[in-house]
Image 1 (cartoon, rainbow, N blue to C red):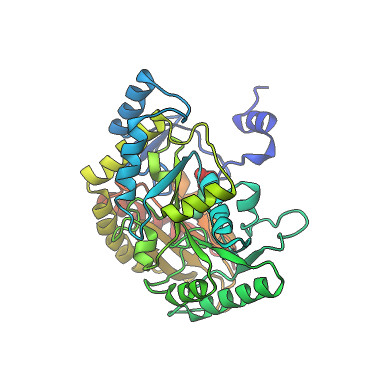
Image 2 (cartoon, helix red, strand yellow):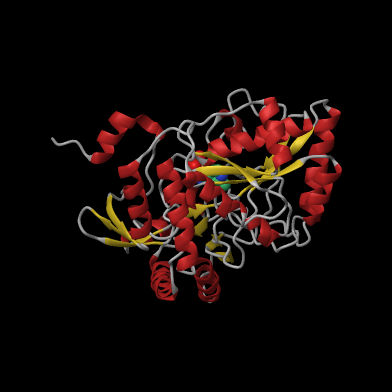
Length: 421
Ligand code: PMP
């Protein structure tokens, strides 16, 4: 009997690289916001943020291929492209953030950011939310609440309740700031001390709760008062996805000390970065030292530059803003007995489904809904503490016509997906 791809994958990759969906999709080609599987079935990509400017964008493909044909090296030699890129990227940041370490993944970038906060403050206590993800290294995975580390969370980690606009509305962020204040006091009382807070300014992995600009102002004051750094994980919101702003922190209205980015940065080529003020960079250098063989190599730099150029040339941030407003209008018009809250900012959308007035998560229903949508040719998924929020986060070229296809299909899927008795 021939081995299925699922079995072959499990045999060769073990259990650590699970696929999405009951019947994993086998994608073989992509273009723009479209994907095709091995049988030629077409899917609308309503989920992937890595192919930021569209799958296989010809300008990025060409930049990678051209540079790969000329030179690729490790990063100990002079090369113009990486400098051109850092100049272009830091020009988009305020707050005296003018220097950059290039890495290959968001996890590495966040790992560095955590150590920068340690280097500046001489303390190690760190705060994140209790429903987040900042990476897969030992240090960053200790901030991820999905699976506590063996032996429990390290003593220097404090996870504060993530914003949850449905269950505990906190319009001015005072409840959130209170949790942060208590965590800082606890870190100080235990002698560990406080180095900073890492947060995604869109709270993307938290399930995109509905928070408004200014939400973090009280928390920011508390963190500053305690001498901590604000480490903004822009891996998801950065590069125009917010529509109204290039960065998530600009939209939320906060002043970061360190900004990290990754996923969308080179449209699929592995590139990431940590950006900071020169004083923070210098403190990090004194305390740790760092070298990254691949980060910012000439091919990565070419891919990053091309991606940034396409965002501008094709007005993709503006497209995100336009499409966002349209999708929100259409999602808000959906009617379903289990639909409790529709939320979104830029090209991030969440639709949370619950079973009753106690907001019991309708997890199985959303699981089924996702399967129905995938069968109809729409790639999306679930998010939130209980996986009961539909997660929509398409590539930036996603337009009005794609939004119509998506919401029309969702309307049909909602009508046919069985509601639990
Ligand atoms: N930060 C956030 C907010 C993320 O969503 C992710 C990846 N999902 C990471 C960091 C880690 O990035 P990478 O997978 O490139 O290490």
